[in-house]
Amino acid sequence: MAALRNAVLDVAQILLRSLPWPIKPGLIAVGHPGRDAPVLLTCNYDLTVRRVLGALRGLDVYLLVAPSKGINVWCAAAGGYFTSHQVISILRTSGIGDLVDHRRLILPQLSATGVERKLLEERTGWRAVFGPVYAADIPAYLANGKKTEAMRQVRFTLRDRMEMAAVWASPVSLIGAAILAISWRPLLLPFVALTWMLALGLYVFFPWLSKEAESAHRPAPAWVRWMVFFDPRVRRNSAVWLVFLAGMWSTAYLVGDWRVHSLIGWSLASFFLMLLISMDLAGSTPVYKSGLHEDRLLHVELNADACTGRAMCREVCPKDCYVVDAVRHKAEIAKPNACVQCGACVVQCPEDALAFVTPAGERIPPDVIRTYKLNMLGARATSVARD
Ligand code: SF4
Ligand code: SF4
Image (tube, rainbow, N blue to C red):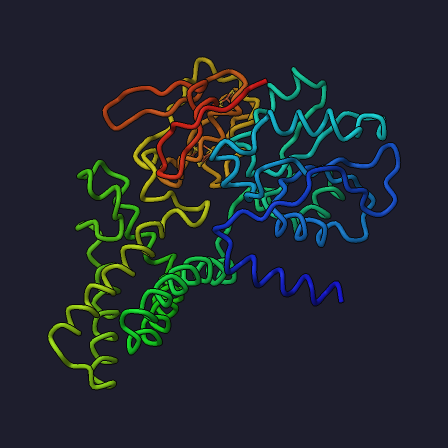
């Protein structure tokens, strides 16, 4: 029964992933944890908690569920809903300090854009470390006591991409179907079918498409910020829309709806679909920045004189951008083009040796990145509490 409930919840939460799905924050004892049991922490998004609990099956650990307004770790941390404030609050209210003899807290790596390790330690005395990106790697991480390079990196596998296609296609097709059911019923089924085909096609070919779109990291006209997919420099991607248009026109022909206003309607509908789905193609995964995000054009600057080589940047970078010279105690940004401007390294650097720099050369200091998180439109405008 529980398995069936989980399967139904999995499907519902994947299809409606753009909505928050909160559960009650608190402390969960997994197995029979003793006084030296590891203490892990995650957000209060139901799908995440169930996946983490699934990965922890058979282990004896404590899991703290911190309030994040029911949003997943990556989005909540970037948006200011999963910060040091929420972690401090759950550490203080859960009573975990009375249950264990140590003060070591394992945070999800993707929370590093929002949860400041240094501040957490100063305010609570708990020593925070960033665990693996994926819950499935937690057992190996706990067994080995350290994170491998693979555990630090975000992947966007075919399965992840299919999930993301469903995340985009389900609300678009639901809203579109509701409107068409009232106003233009013959187009309802083709619209829904083509929405799903487009979404699945985009995400199957995401690795190829995102490589093309990477050229949009250069300064671009203002409108490009809103429509990465239509960036004139990303010409090959336009072919996808043309195929989509051809598919729609062929369907119109097959159903016998070959009138001028219908063709215009089909074309407008396809343009809307492309706009809706492709506009944020880049923002649906931690491996690529949203077209909406103004941070997309920033680059990370390293002040080598201030760097002490403590490697926190390498520890939290989901794109493996850093190498750290253990002899010279200096970091180097070895793969600047792989950066997705998540800000995790800037937030966590204990020496403030890192900062973002705009295309105009303006430096954005670490405390701005720590204090102002991204709003729904990708602007750094949401101020967060840091105590
Ligand atoms: S976290 Fe900061 S001080 Fe540490 S290695 Fe990276 S840049 Fe240097
Ligand atoms: S180098 Fe880029 S991708 Fe890596 S942590 Fe820093 S901002 Fe994020």
